[in-house]
Image (cartoon, rainbow, N blue to C red; front, side):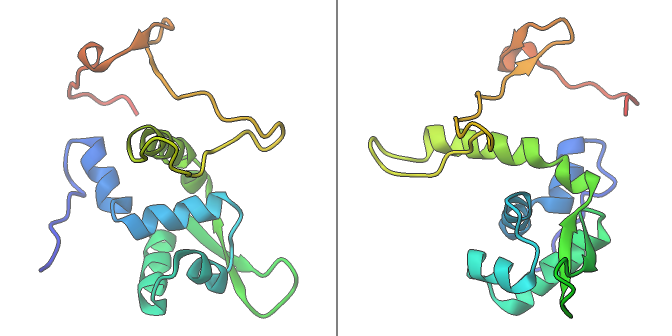
Length: 149
């Protein structure tokens, strides 16, 4: 079954999911944020079929999330490096991780947690804030059509 494109949708959530909405793409981005750069390392980390990984990496490069670069060690392999557009997805990955850590584990069940790389302390929970600094909940957020990019 062919997937419907959401590329022209007025909703930025729909457009973003059209670009990175499958779990493999998000996990590749997560691993790239963790420093993984080589095809074989992505494959080992994700336990994903080579053809599936190849297709996802190609798509992420085409969409400007990753770019290819010569191997840092001068080897013959190419590496996949996050672009600024890709690095900007870190907040999305952290939000998913924090939500999953809160709601997807039973009491005492071990799981990973994202930490500050320097001090090794958990990252403070992300919150939505208004322009004037108020913390916003679901009832405090609305969607409107506009051109504010």
